[in-house]
Amino acid sequence: MADILIAEDEDVLRRNLTFILNSSGYSAVSSRTSVEAIELLKKRHFDVVITDLVMPVKGGGELIKHISEHHPETTIIVITAYPSADSAIDAIKKGVVDYFTKPFKTEDILNAVKGALEKKKEIPLTWEKLTPLGLTRREEDILRLIIEDGITENSEIADKLSIKVATVKEHLGNLYGKFGINNMASLISAVIKILRKP
Image 1 (spheres, rainbow, N blue to C red):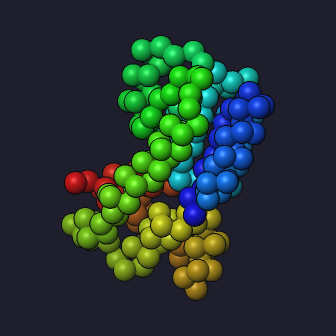
Image 2 (cartoon, rainbow, N blue to C red):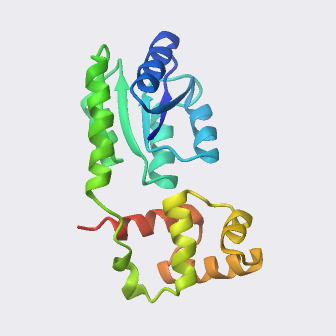
């Protein structure tokens, strides 16, 4: 079952979308602001995020930026009452797969979600593409837990692999060196880009 996050400040639309997606067999949750959405993204993995562009506090642009930097594997769909060519181009550059202007048909959103999830299936994560980097078996195990299972806490990784937290930190340090980066989000982004290369 795919996990979907809806970020929309319009109460009726947010509740309707959440209800329709849950009724269609997805696991959908919602937030009123992009700040709330970012907090939810820090706690769990979402396959698809549907976001409005204009919301209180921080706009949808901030949410899109956060997702593209920290959750590159998450698909983004934009819904907006204030469309513009600039916002559409900017959204697509940041990895948004669909852009809808309000009012829209719920059927279109459902088709977009279905299409986004099918595209993900079409591009399998090919772990052999990491072979040239000379990863150890343990480093690959850690990456698989992070990418496939969404486990990013060192203690959880240690528990899953029955190793010490210090050992996880050491392996992550080696991985950061091999990928030429210095944090978990950049590591996830770098690995997914390699795994999804055609």
